[in-house]
Image (cartoon, rainbow, N blue to C red; front, top):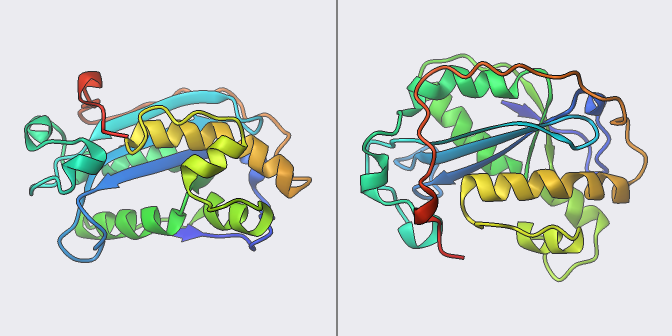
Length: 211
């Protein structure tokens, strides 16, 4: 699903802007029984300015998995859409820009598996993984999202929620790309009018995950 640039971060499409995505899942087995339980996408222009946010819980049709990590309980998923119901909306939010994630191969594996189960053919989407980008360019004790965000002066609010992590990664991205070196991402992306179809089931704020 995703196509990645070289480890130095060079990418021929950075001027398009970004769709920063984060997932919460029931576990780590993307091709087995584990499923996505929450997805958040933050669209930003080539300057890193936020243009829009898509966030929804996803009913995995099974137990939500590690509630102590992501804070999602079974009762919260009763009215959430299933993945096939939001699949086309997700593709619309990822269209025409660089898809960004911290450890993007995790997101790639789960999205590819979910789209395959939904019998939807996938386009090849240009993607940027901030994890190896940070590993190759930043001397830090580790390169977890929270550590890289701290280096960038970004607070991770509601860590281990899809929206909290996606927003933090989107805010951290400009600093990381600046540190890496000159990038062709200084052309502003035009204003977008997002049309999101399907049901929208945001995570209740009072049930934020444990940090």
